[in-house]
Image 1: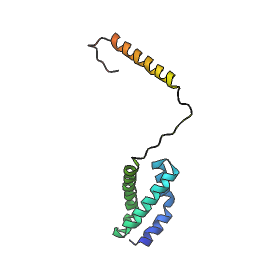
Image 2: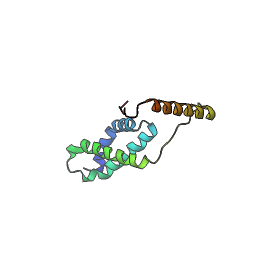
Image 3: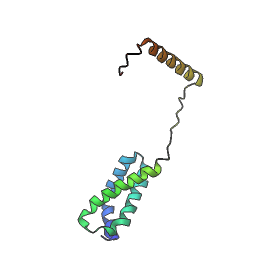
Image 4: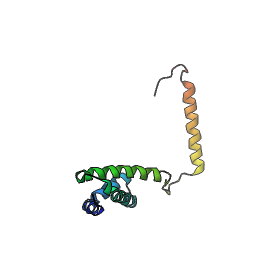
Length: 118
């Protein structure tokens, strides 16, 4: 298959590729990145495709592999959203201490030979 023919078929189905990428990433900006990586990979590999009838299966296989690579590459990047409702440190520590004491007391009340699953 020629790169031009692959480009035409991708153009016709770009919305589907983008929606699939959006479903996988849940972020429009990351979906655009993933979609563009998929398109580049398909265009790069399209000349190796011998049967034009297998193009869409080929696209989805490339999409799945590109998504796996994307996950590996971006797994090191993590973001945490900060909120304004951060608990007061003293109250937070007191709550943890109280829970630990309660759990400790519960453990002593149980018979040590009775090890049933909760």
